[in-house]
Amino acid sequence: MGNSKSGALSKEILDDLKLNTKYTEAELCTWYQSFLKECPSGRISKEQFEGIYASFFPDADPTAYARHVFRSFDTNADGTLDFKEYIVALHLTSSGKTLRKLEWAFALYDVDGNGTISKNEVQEIVRSIFNMIPAEVQKNLPEDENTPDKRANKIWSFFGKDESDKIAEGEFIKGVMDNKDILRLIQYDEPKKIQEKLKEKKQ
Ligand SMILES: [Ca+2]
Image 1: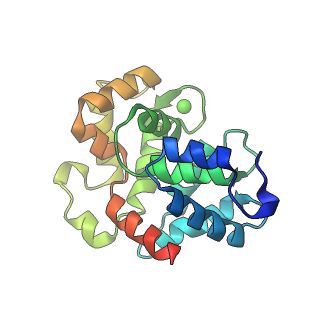
Image 2 (image 1 turned 45 degrees about the horizontal axis):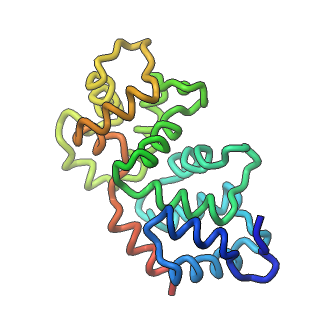
């Protein structure tokens, strides 16, 4: 797709990204140039993607979370993302509750991709989110959500599930849409910090 050899972003991809993300043409073009510098093949590997997350969270360990995010966007499982997938990943992983973001959140939590979320899967993602929260911030979390297990239990009981139950996609999206607290608990919510880092990277 596109004409990556010229070093310019194809109009088709640019229009698509302008329409589907909050980013401006100038931002997208600048990011594309630095993307090509770091990934001359036009595709970013899982390791490079993890490296970018590591630079966003120097005080924490975002590796597991980055790996889950990468998996949820690498839909053909070839171990790489192209520029468009990469930008959509950055856009969707910032907080919010549009339908598309919640569909992505479901894919993130459905670790084995079987179409439902189990309690183990919630625990796994919540654990990876906790790895990104600096220790001093963890100390100030509310008592009933200050460990990965407590937070996973809180999410699970919100959905009214027994240990071995599963959450389907429609149920997940409706639940999160209807409850701000659950939206907060399922995501890693520090968009400002990420935005600042992205701005720094552009320079
Ligand atoms: Ca699953």
